[in-house]
Image (tube, rainbow, N blue to C red; front, side, top):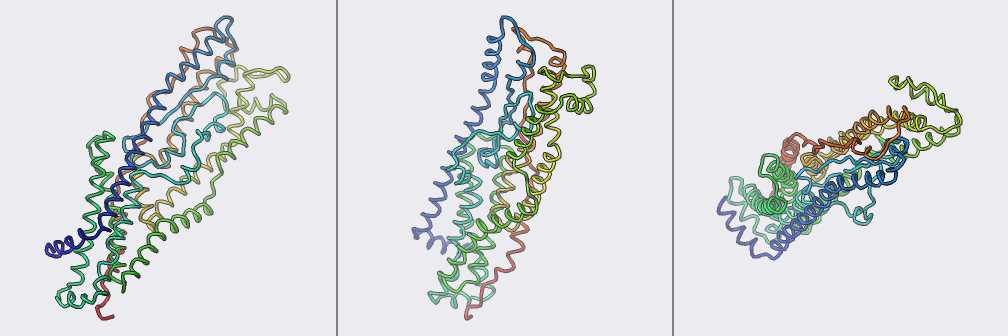
Length: 453
């Protein structure tokens, strides 16, 4: 095996394509690390500004009402409260949903569902290009390099007419040669990936713990199914041109076509209402409430909130903050079933996408990496749940004051609730079995074609 490695390495290092592919992978990885650092810094900077932004808002309210005070309803209406989910250190390596889903939500005491799906506008052109993080480089570009380096390890010798001489060695010479050549190419790709990860640890100041190295372990395991695919193509192809065409067809099918088909199937089986639809329905119910008798809607609020029955009625003509905020909660409840359906279908789609990711090695790898980085759908749903809990805390604080017609004066904002004790989303349990089993299922098909066939 060592002699085969040595001879193959001598040939590989003389080929410009080897250095071009490995060098391109390295440069792509450095670019991804740089973008990940900028991505992480932007999110951390945005979170670090939240306290100052909230205090500036409170100062404006204090200045506006410092002389005569104002009804607590006004203060509550004009107050926004930031709820955030800080990124885990590994989020810079695998962005997941954090570049498209909000990680900071400014909530008011109004209806919550219309606020949960509001996010900052981003450059649509950049979003359409997808994420260029280290998970993409190691999960998509590294397998491509492995395919291009290894697809013709036998077909080239077959075309040159030296394959019969190699096969004449006996004792499974072809199989040993195939294994040695592919393992050498895998080793080169692994070295580049590990070097990139080491640079990322230094630049991003990642803690050298189990979670950090487990991320690299998952990424490297993701190369094993591609090693098996490369072995199948190399073993069964008759010519270098045919093996290249097969390699490109496999790459396009597994990276582009198969994920698109899976997404189409899941979208059909588990249709998820858009967040905009939830927002529109909630607002429509709220707007219709202005033209309806107020007491019946207020009674619907009291039926779910018996602690506020000490304020049993609202005037039909005069505006009251009590009815206004109660009506917002009634509007939220009116779309509760749709919200539950939205969340349930998202979870079902996510669960099935993880199962069907076996059909696409890059999707499988990136799903495992985003879960381990705390940037997947589960992390986003946790942020929504945290926001809902804090919104309930706001209502518990302000509703008794608003219903009791309390007036706030200067200094009132000091007692306003603040969102605290935020923690990054937990990492998904490490599961190395899927890529290992997928590689084990594919390897039996990597038997070399007979020399004279």
